[in-house]
Image (tube, rainbow, N blue to C red; front, side):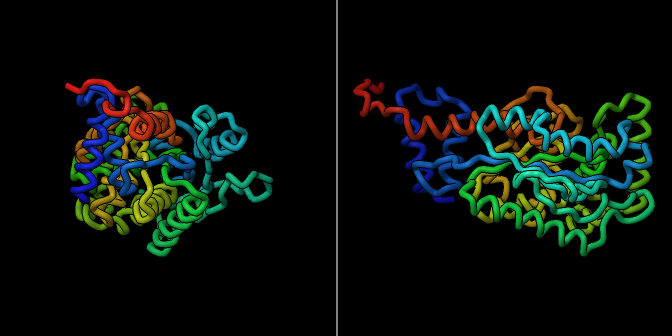
Length: 343
């Protein structure tokens, strides 16, 4: 850490026309972004949300999800028709939105989508990890690299603040398995209701994931994110992992969404230990396990609205708070400038 810059930023924050600490968490965000960008005048340029979509082989069994696998493709079409929550929030807050087909079990090639739909399909969903590995190691590598390429392209367009979302029926199960392996918490502690699961279905879901955990010996993969992705990951999670790593490499401000996005970050942190220094955690998801993930990462989220939709919606709602932090640092008068007495 640049201690001199930290002291200069802290002095600038404390010199604004307010009591010390009166802007609370906004002051912490302003300091963090200044340190990320290595400047006393940070900026948020072209804030962007990227939604990665993919299907999971386990979803076809119905054991971990009440909604059919086809809903993933249906929701991608909803995104492209601007009918989803993420469309509403990104439009409201004037953010760019990209939707990525990372591996949906549907052929979108015949559709004439705009340039904010990214064709990056790695397969028609992963394989059923109850029976075999979800992905080959080649698929893992290719998918991570594709995530990096996507962020490189977005960064080249002038974006320095990015948030990631996802869509994939069954992906809370993959995230719970990844979380359990990395944090070494039990499947029961990591597994929640996901999308519309009732109590009986939750018990089936946990029992199924316990079988998967034992089959693939996930307890031994705590420090092996590539093998972990190969065993139980999803294309959207692997692509998001690559996106996180590239955003850090490019010095971007990273806005972390909910349960699945944080699982991808857990994987990325296995490769880049300092990645959380660039991360602002948008919210605490209502999905069971997310709060424990945040505790593991020693992260303090901005919001707790009981949201558990995914799509990057938490990141989109948090973005104006981040912009407010930068704005006060750059535009608010100091005591000296305003001729206000400073006790």
